[in-house]
Length: 271
Image (cartoon, rainbow, N blue to C red; front, side, top):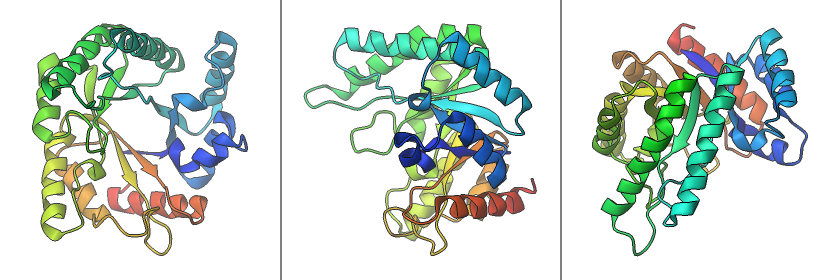
């Protein structure tokens, strides 16, 4: 597995401009990562001049840009807004192609009040139908993630699997995160999460994991209840050997937490 660093771990640094894509690549290499997952929002430009400069930097860097992530919503009620979302994703698939980035992480959408879930799901399918051809031409995989909110669409293993099988394309797979399936920290919910993860990991092109600070706490103040070694075991049994993007959202030393996280994951994966 390739171990990458999620840009979300340094959201504040990107917002206050103490970190940019170039310094993020250097930092990821310093912390021991194989690459980064970059948010589309941290690209200051997608001009040919900027992309050429970034491509040159990546070419000589010990780390790669393994994925770009977008915050799209294909369940928007207005057709014009959905069309804009589709155009945006199509544009980013060709940015990925030009930079040699294999995966573009996308989202399904959020159910709005007054909209039937069946109708909202149909909108999501329709939008992926529109963008999939571009991804196939670009040689880029769209990795779909449902999100964890109460109103997020296509959250269950069955719904996610059905969507991937419906399109039947290597360019449409999943982005999985154990937290997406964890209902609470009870032993029963934890075991159910491992089972769900195993079913969807077989259809995944990308995954995320949250790492903890030295006291074992997340930004919410407590462990999720998931065991990293068990998650790695589930991935192995599912023959998942793609990218694992580590994300730290706590209030402690983000660099130290990520450095420890990547070292621990390497021990578990033998990488």
